[in-house]
Amino acid sequence: MLQTDTSTASYWITNPNNVVRYNVAAGGNFYGFWYEIKEHRDGPSATTDICPTGTALGESHDNVAHSNKRFGLRLFRYSPVQFPCAKYDSTDNPSLGATFYNYMIYKNQEVGLLA
Image (cartoon, rainbow, N blue to C red; front, top):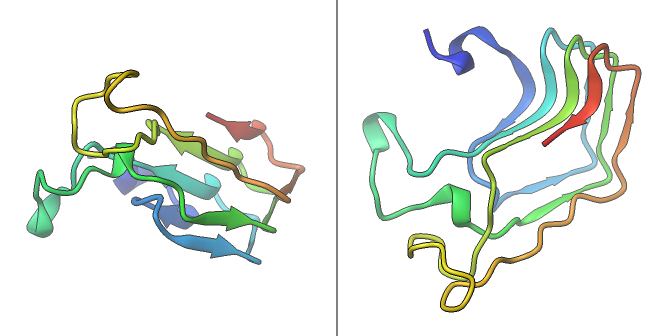
């Protein structure tokens, strides 16, 4: 089984180009907010034309994660760049910033943030 089959999240985000704001994730068995970003989409809609690991972050702010059994916010394999599907190169394809702000993360059993 895949980790996604055995680990639950209140909010499971697989593409960072989303709006995630004003949410509460409380009391979950694993993660509050889980950004599980893969290199390409998989499953029935699999394609190499979309590259989530390199895609710019949409909005992620003003969220609360508390009392989850593992992590409040987990970021997994995320490196945004100017051209998401192009080869990662600091000269021709520079890195982009990603800001997660105004999160309140507390009382998670392992750690609040794992990146």
